[in-house]
Image (cartoon, rainbow, N blue to C red; front, side):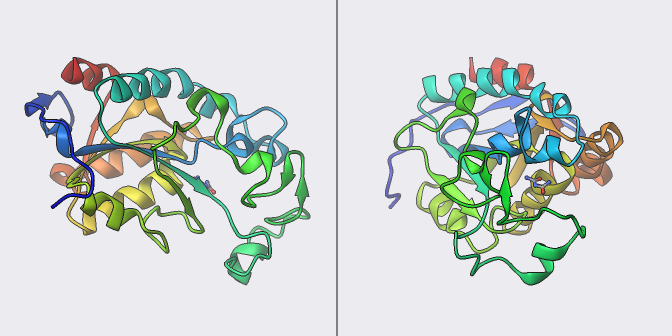
Length: 230
Ligand code: C5J
């Protein structure tokens, strides 16, 4: 028996590529990946590294609309944050030194220690802030299933499908969709709700998901998902 009762909802289809997605709202969670201040806000770590945060910020409004509809329908919402323990015990040395940057994970950044749990920059942007009852998965890796209890939470709620949004398209979104696919979840990615600092990675990151008959999942838009919820 599921630990949490899911609402009875009718299956419907969502226009998507490479073909229609059979949407079962009561078994589908909205999984919002790493919409954290350090990745998205001007003055954060992402911008400090020279990235154009406007490429990510364009996803905020469509995510807000989707989140609001999901909440109104009483469906499962889950948020993730990439980050590490303050003592860095879960930070692989290889991840710490990758990039050879002068400032790396755990160092003091513009919004507190970079990618450290409890620091301002690590938290989720106010526009999409989790509500009580919405699980927040703190993940040390790029994929949301690695070293987390996400799979158990989804299983306990009878979730078989995911609408995956957030940042960045080619890194944490793609890694999570691939992990989910290998665990048997059907994933749909609304293209306007995911973002990359690099337009070419945005394009290819989405193409990789839907290629070869949907090898990792489906790609659609927030408008099509909202229509299906309505
Ligand atoms: C995410 C990253 N969230 N790009 N992290 O994609 O390092």
